[in-house]
Length: 83
Figure 1 (cartoon, rainbow, N blue to C red):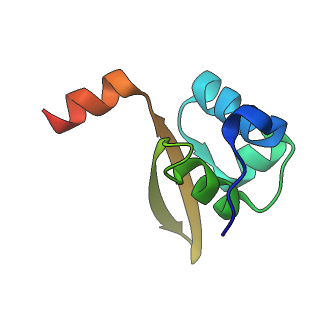
Figure 2: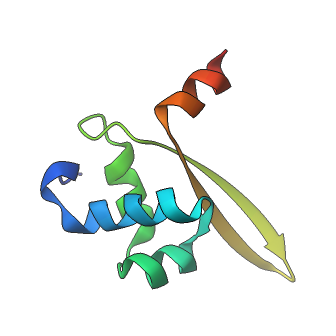
């Protein structure tokens, strides 16, 4: 995969902005609020070493439907989680 650089990508910047504003977001939330599609690909691009974002994913299943939820871990949070 050839990940876009965060600094040059309005698409990636919109996703990070919404994650910072809203906290944990489902795939549907990211699509609706950041106006993007292919959320799993975007998350992979943001996690790519050239961008270096830490994004956690958790899944929950309800009535046979699995919902993925993503949380951006900011540097200060990351240090707390490691320590």
